[in-house]
Length: 283
Length: 336
Image (cartoon, chains in turn red, yellow):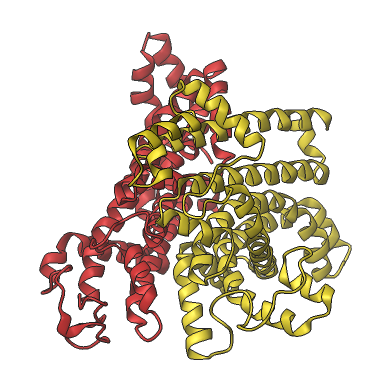
């Protein structure tokens, strides 16, 4: 992958193709759900209604109700908030730390780079999700702790991507010139390296966002993430599991929503990569 | 070759050190007093003080770490808070059930993923390719725990074709213990009724677990095949008039599968975590469902024991995979 600087026209081109458009649509819809949930639904996500317990989908509750009579569709809409926020939080931790450390490592080269890379190798040789599971259990089951654990464990992958790019850029003329003029390391990173390092890292970020939503929902499903009564997609499925035989809507619908959201981020990642990779664009 | 092996072994030392430090640090993060956790809420202050001394919690952190590592290296993973049994023995007794599940899942994901990857690469850019790509994206985007519930809903609750939980039908005795893998043990003992029951119980959880990896397999085989099919020797083979299927499946696939070996090792990570989730869904009596029980009971010795065991297995398997890789692809030596 080349070290192509940011170019807006290329990003525009990626919206072509029906799959990418659908992915954009789904993501926009989920974001709208997260932002407008209180206006979109007449129900309170946590209000129990013992007259309508485990009701199948109907005109009033078009995704049915759960074991406490709460409207499933409403909980899915409200659930978009923690589910998206968890994904974004994980990515922000990985991206923030990984981008800085990776770019720094690539800029310094030499023994600093060697040390950081060996540490990264070691970190990546561990089964991440298993460690995340233990870390979340130790920090105490909560969505925030799940996000912290999953975020920290994603840092090494970001370091690798960013470092590779920075290493390629550091020998380029504009970086050498800035260095010759006495620019500080921080200035070099901020003004000259980050703009070139960012695009490929963003591709990775998009893929990671889908994976991060899946991972945090999995931790919520087994009870380590979001805690009741919070409406979160993974924990909704975890709660609905007990009732799945005979009450499919509690599990089927939130799962479809997670799948569509994660698939959309993956498709978007594909489209971004194709838009940024000159080899693919020529083909 | 020797240098590569030496480097890998050196790396293993560092990774083992990192695993021990991380697990030690996590076990010290646990809120509250470990002695209190072991003894329960009604313990007397004196008993807690004695337990603190017994666990070495009154020692400096470095001493505690050294003690932790030496305990681990002797196979002492501590005692489960809920069952009062040694953690390692309990986990190891459950390993065969999980191993059977993982092996079956890996077989399924190779049997489905490799042909799908080849077909999409050969028909690059056509509808089969788009379809395959769609399946792969759905595969990596679908929560496995959810797919498990869906398969259970369909094949157990609706169609009643397959059982939805456990390893054997009610009333059946497990086959005589040899490997702990019921399919092998039952076959060795000639108990075909038990074998059929074990197989029918294995299908749904294994298929679910396979789904976690099949998307990655398809993507990887496809991209490796696309690369190999563009090589000169493939063009030469075509020019010689060798049958297309022979070129695809013998000449190209053999080389495309080399990078695939490493991925099998890396995929073990998703299988290890997946087992916790999937075993819970299907009430599969393995390591994963045991660990989930420990998580819900805050049984930290079991959770940490699992983390150490899973990390060690993962690191060792990947070491073996890497060494196999250097045998399969002699070019690797030049790079190091």
